[in-house]
Image (tube, rainbow, N blue to C red; front, side, top):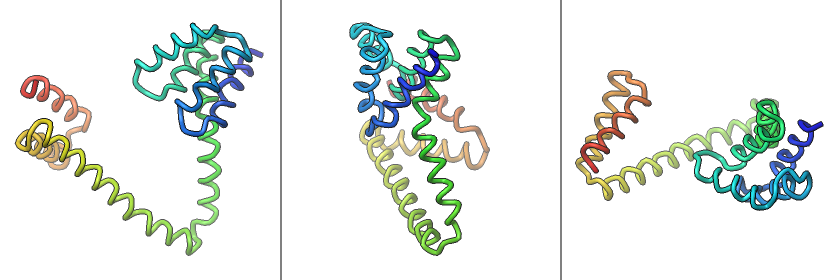
Length: 176
């Protein structure tokens, strides 16, 4: 029974919390504090503060922690799944819809239009990254890090994780 309660406590805010984690936090608080009485308001605020210090989505971190406290490892898994289930269900539904009509001329035109838009958005984002990097650390370092990264990834096929670690080390030693 506890696993069903954990599921509902995080599934309902996942459906109703339009706007992501911050929008669903009051809904999660209502379920966890008022509906099921698993925590006091002070305990919930401490969990929220702890969750905000860690990287990643707040709702899944809270679901994992509260689920673990209430139902152990399986409770944590249920809580995390319940948090992402609404998005997962919607994505699968939309994917089924898209696959059903993938041969439609309208869907093909949509795909043709969306690809360049995504490319432009990625290009703008890259430009903004380079522009802010040039202002923060200087053009020489920006071009050096970008150029070396390009050569290592594209020419020498080095895994991007190693390049990121190398850039962090370079920044810590040279730019600090």
